[in-house]
Image (cartoon, rainbow over all chains, first blue to last red; front, side, top):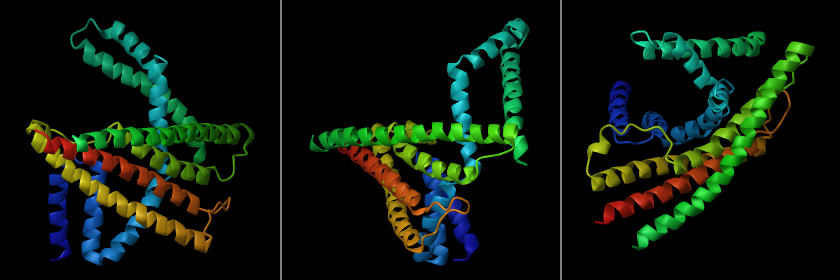
Amino acid sequence: MTPLTVGIIGVCVLLVLLFSRMPIGFVMGLVGFAGFAYLVGFEGGLGVLRTVVYSTFADYGLSVIPLFILMGSFCFYAGLSKDLYDTVHSWLGQLRGGLAMATVGACAGFEVIRSACFSAAFGSRS
Amino acid sequence: MLLNRVAYSADRVISKISRWLHSVGVSILAAMMLLTFADVALRYVFNRPISGSYELTEFMMAVLLTFGIAYCAVVKGHVTVDVVVSRFPQRVQAIIDSITCLLGLSLFSLITWQCILYAAEKYGSGHGSVVLEIPIYPFIGLIALGSLVFCLALLAHLIEFLSQAVEK
């Protein structure tokens, strides 16, 4: 089979496995590994498996994600997001479509706080 | 039901182990937060950042992710698409789940095995990080440990799904 055929089959297998309730990350890993092992050989596939797992887990760029979720949890348990939402809701809630506007406004308010922190934290890195 | 009882006790043991690993991972997340804050604050105020904080964050990420993955499996928190499968009858769901669980188990047992080999290789070569020269083999070993516990969690789920598929 040509690499193109392998790729098309791989995408089909990916979709089938995704819709069969397998966790998304494992599906991607499995299909990637199987395709590479088919094209280059099983040993090569295992070699990719050993290096890529470490380099993906120990990635500085991805460290933003757990810290971001942690920040979200702090904001949630501190009641910050609820207060922001209530504020905007009391301003715009009585208008038509007030619920949607309040949601957008609360997001904007959160974004103001977040980007102020972010520009302080990451702006100096460059 | 023997299979059912085995599934129950396996699930209890695995959830205890993974909870312990998870609390270690969470403490590392807190340390990562403090490290990043201290790094940024020191750079801003004293213009003297912590050297090697980049590498420390990378190592912490490796441990954090690998220790969290098993707990996530125990509480069934991994992101899945269940628009199709949830419409099937219970037994068909259990059969499909056991097949996908077996696939995940085979992938992660390969990962565990390869990580152990990779750690041994890095131990032999004495490869370390660039600035602080911390050897990286312990972290690869911890990834192997985390994925081993994750494999055990998947095995417990597999037994559970099989018992669901067998029983009437």
